[in-house]
Image (tube, rainbow, N blue to C red; front, side, top):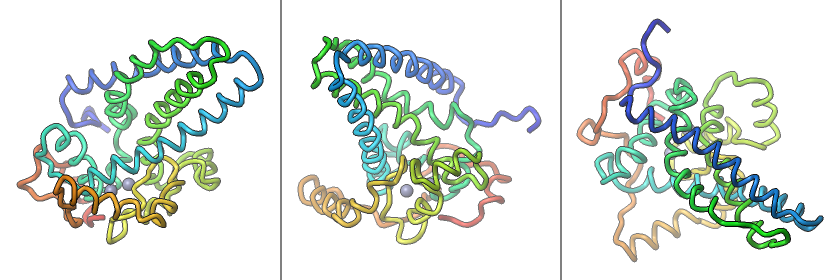
Length: 254
Ligand SMILES: [Zn+2]
Ligand SMILES: [Zn+2]
């Protein structure tokens, strides 16, 4: 390891990510406390259980949409989305195993920067005991936020050669994104299986031709042209690429 830091981005962004992760856990505690106060009867428990499940499935859908948008539209220079969304996914395709070298902060911080402001707003919503609709909404959002938080970690484990045995067991039970399942996305033509939380929605979205229909709609309405799969060019690159040693370890593109 030496004294070389394991991340390669600005200390300010690093500090922001650490703050966002701490804020995320505090806000998750506040939302959980709100939900707890809203459970008045047995129905309340059923509402909470179904909301947790809905949030978990919802995170898989959100991961698929965000990943598909980043892989399909814009360039690394697109305003805001380019460096924050397009570039990480494009570089992930070029060096898929690099994600396993990211530490906890780098893996999870960016997601928290997006979820924390919305969580802060939802934390303002009071839940009176027995208000099942509000209870469902707040709990589902809490579950969605925590599942979005976990998504990059699950994605990282899907690229890890030997993850901890508990993780392997969860992958085998398909509770989280399995390694072989995710490899379908990293195989030509790179246009399917974008969901990276559990991957549960990959097959239904494929059967429904969800991405094809969305691309067709966006072309018709916004005139957005989907990009055929290409590797990032040097011209597109807006930040330093991984170190030469890292590149040597992953010479072949996805
Ligand atoms: Zn991708
Ligand atoms: Zn991947």
